[in-house]
Image (tube, rainbow, N blue to C red):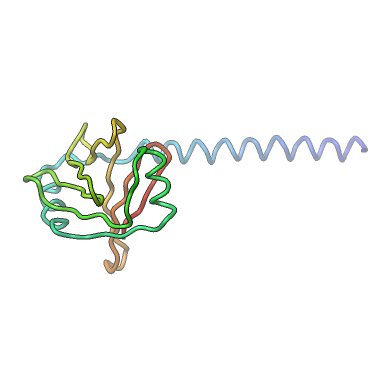
Length: 141
């Protein structure tokens, strides 16, 4: 390997490492910059909108939840209103209360806390309920 080729290779490695660091830093910054739910009126509207709805997920999300929370998860999720700012998430044979915990909508399954995100497509046609715990995410649609 000539000196010029070796220099180019080292420069390419340094530039790649620097760009990877910048991208990782940007994503970490964006993940930390999310706004928490704090307005009780917004939470009340979400609870009312989701009351009586049923959602489905795929096998990969079910398997991820089952291994994370150490219990079997069915394909469907039933959501019912429990109060002005809380809901029951019913997974087959068991239910979990979801409410505001530390300014975030979430709950606890088998001692593991999780958060809930409700999203709508930019066209308004599709909605999804996501359960997030650490790096695991399960999407119900």
